[in-house]
Image (cartoon, rainbow over all chains, first blue to last red; front, side):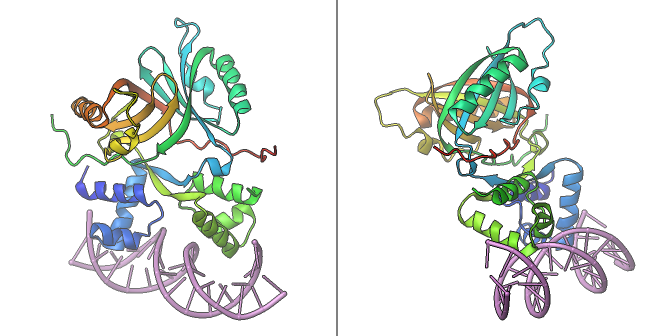
Length: 153
Length: 153
DNA sequence: TATGAAAAGTAAACAGG
DNA sequence: CCTGTTTACTTTTCATA
């Protein structure tokens, strides 16, 4: 990816509501030039969308947990993500190399919600779970700095 | 939190660049009324900011990993997050209840970067690590649906 | 805390190099 | 792929209920 696009992406990842005028100033391009580039980055799927970053505890979701899941029957076809996809409390789902199959990031309001969710995940996903409660979040949602170079092989 | 503010927050969490005019239409309020409410949500820190959602592989960060860390010396004061705070590859840091002390979410470009990062984290954080490679990401960055009710005690 | 109106600024579309 | 212009829309502020 071009350094200029990288700069644009990085800037928008930090401030998703910046105006095209300001963005253009930051990256040294006219308003319409950045505008065109951003539209193209959106079309190409490099920019997937825009989100407000929320204070989860403040909106009633003070509990975070990480949950590893393993299918009850490892020989059955593995469609756990599809089977859990409708559960909104599962904020992220990673397929991992390790003892477990998936790691889920969970966000709920109360211990009771976590208990209900656990039962639902086990039943709906036909899997066993290991839950790790998050006690505090020193940080989250940070942008890893983008690589400066392309990895030419 | 009021249902109206919840609605606003949820809408902005899905589309962080929606105009106040459209947002007002969605929640049934005039442009200036939503505008004032959003500004207040920002001031109160309930909306912490706005981000573009990036396709990480496309911008040169195809590798994701989860890393559990435990201090070498559990009797030493635990300031691991502060000591690791300057490492940009650590996208999230959760303090957890469990065998390990923290879980880190890592984003890098190449296996070699992960190797270097590992050494740096162990040295800089005085901690041992267990790394779990993410093979694929069925989903990520989803908004957990906001609770409808306040939990009156 | 809401509305509606006015001023300033921006997005989107377009012509042209 | 850039710039500059134009038009429509949006943000922001303000007076007012």
